[in-house]
Length: 143
Image 1 (cartoon, rainbow, N blue to C red):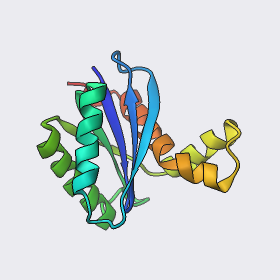
Image 2 (image 1 turned 90 degrees about the vertical axis):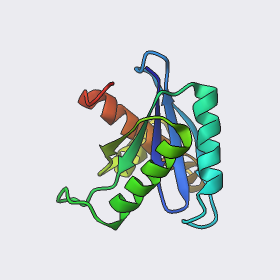
Image 3 (image 1 turned 120 degrees about the vertical axis):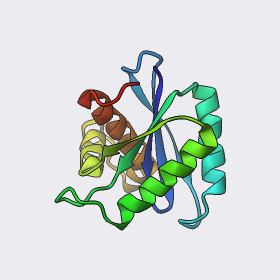
């Protein structure tokens, strides 16, 4: 089973994917847009990636509040997930993404990525890989 992980943000979407066994995760890219609501090209690019990577399930980070409740950002992520599901025809699952940016930062530190411009170029796709890894490690709905 091949999974596609997405870290949805206001102007970027980090993308990561697993191998065909669903065990090895790699960063793919960061999709950038000018404005938060401009999602048509973002969804079109996700469709292309799904096709090329032959993804079967999409996992989107769910930005919960620290107390576990859902706020405005989580609602936006869920709306985005519905849009992606409609566009791709694939099942979408959500994964708690609290502290994934912190973990992504630690991973970049461990890998010697120290320059601010290098970190900005990778943080969202690294966060997508963390989200995907957390989902796979959780043993959640593997279909």
